Length: 423
Image (cartoon, rainbow, N blue to C red; front, side, top):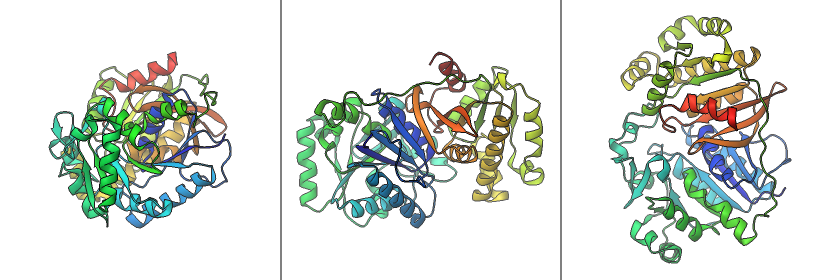
């Protein structure tokens, strides 16, 4: 099928988040893990490419994104979406702004929007300021993120040092007046040379207004939720055929494993809740791993009943994370955890696991790469923005859910396993 909409996400969980919301339309959504080596085949109307570029050097992130764009163009896409985290994870150097400007240059567009709002998950933008629940971003747990600590809540101030052209705002009062009013403000900004426009949104109705106003933009950027209304708009105007292929759910063995590398506040709660169920669990200690490697956890895993969905986790509180980073270095500590969790995924698959729950963007990227997963079809949502996905690994059909750190409620791991049983 000819692709009409191509999206590029800066991490793997963000990609599944976006793909899951697009799949609410019932239309098949294809998720590619990294830029495919082959020319486009078996394409869907909605193609999403997951990169691992959120914390990569700016030049590397830009180059990989441009490569993804070229593949999507060859697949036939005419509209494009640059997806980043709903908490605008970035540094003063990027990568959100530099990647957006590179895409704009390659697509020949003069303006795009930025809207990371996701009201269902408590992300709202008001007067350009991003809120996580009732807390400004800079007062939320994101202020202690180990790689991208967010110390300012104002998206315009965050974006400005990352881009070379002017930044503006379309505020909530404009959005509340409807799509025509928003388009008028965007046109005025464009006439004034404002290339980057942050758009407020505090409710799903705002997202619908933004999608209606921006549906014909060649490039939109934001969190996943602002793209959610687009399939319905494309179906209504005939851009997307009503008989487009639908997704299917395979039957899988029950053996499962939960792998958690995220240290977000919510993932800490999710791990604690899962431990209370009595599931077998192994906690990874970075200092112990540095001394003894992966052998102890792999030996432990070989003796587990995968029908009980054991948990292997490095999730810890911010103080413990900082202590490990101080001794090992930020990059080394993170990469070591990712490699060990990826090794656990491969070992579990060899032992018969066919259902994998991964918590954390970097963790998800390492696990999917280790399992040799290159394409996923999107299934039922477990929580807003977190679907089950289906793929092939080593000749086996498997299911994965790749959860962004702060998504889902405290019972997410148990809910995920139950959801697959009834999907």
